[in-house]
Image 1 (cartoon, rainbow, N blue to C red):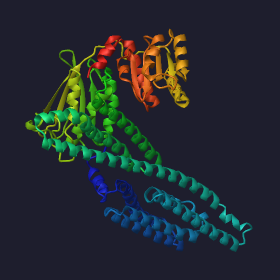
Image 2: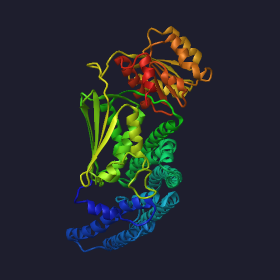
Image 3: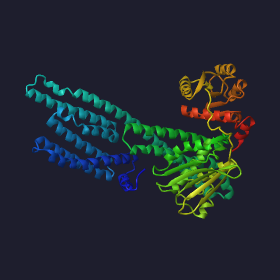
Length: 598
């Protein structure tokens, strides 16, 4: 988090003109490097001169001249970055460092110059990260030629002195060449991966932005041509599908952008790779939300289950951290006697993201957003979402849940985010209200029916979980088996439907859980759950697939997980299904009843 004292300096560093976000991000770090060199080198020389007992030698005057050249190049580079010429400043600075190296190495030779490799490393790293792969390899070749020329100077000096083995002057060329080759190869791979991922993300962003523009144009055309009755029909037809996609994909893009901004904090390849992993994880989360949004238009059945708000909000907080600015304060507090509700977990996350996105747009970057969960009267749970943004007047507050109502400029919002939240809450027998005052922030209150859990049911410790794992992809089955065994499962594997049915019959009295794909090649997906239920009528089933028939939502003690999914997601969903089964929260026909609620 940036302190108030440093914020002006940070804003100044980031105020680089241009439309290339990558170049502007590189410019921030490059400015810091050049300013540091431009300040420290002039301070070092007075100290060196004062410490020397003898007059400056020719080599000392040469060092002073080359350092002066590098300092001038650094300050000129800062000035060029302030005008938006990041690559030009990089080329000038690298050229100055290389010229300094050429002068020093030809004067002193390779052996006397090996102690300080700063300029060599900086030239290669800056060239690769900012100028690209071709520049990286050209710089590597230049450095090797420089080492060779400096080694030649050493060889000639040894020969002139009558040394018995003058070629010893070149003994360090090959080790240096191999060392810098390893560095160059690592940088080349990291730069290639990073630039490819950024290009893919930019292309996806362009396609999504174009989709948003098309959707917003359609919504605007409806607003101009329809009366209130037609407007209500549009809410049903467009608002639940097109509007939801347009609004919530902006939220997911914000999460991806938050991970991608890690590149501004460090040029370390490991940090950049970690940021790319975060982008990939956010993209998978976006795919899950997209799938759920599309299900609204297809009238898919909601997957209602008992949710532990304390655990759920802890997980959602990590997503919110990427949605907001790094300087935003996030707070989550859940009362122990208001932890459990019955809701669709994906819809709950979608609802929170919509509320948080509206709060983010109303706040300063260093604002605060708090979620508080407390018990309410009538056996309900109250969730309060508060921000300290600019608030809203009464005229806006009264219409905030109306579909297509927005105070944002044209092409900046669809006005459907809070309308979707309103529909989700009312569809689960809940209530929603908003309190706001201009200049004092906004609080959204949501009340939902509470679920009372038996005492001591939070953690259900027990012996090994006997699990039947059914998957026809060998590599995937092996990976899941190892992950499950690490979490305390005793796993029996099956690679086909026939094997799975045989094992289910033989182990019916020992199994605690079945994890199965829906499509196994030799089975009938539409009736696969019923086939397993013949031998395992009461054992919880976790079905993992990319497509599910509607009947599966009505099956007893069945959980679903969409592919693709990570081993962590598999373990988490299996634990949630086991918890629900052991607690006895949903039994028999109660599951089918809950699955029909929306």
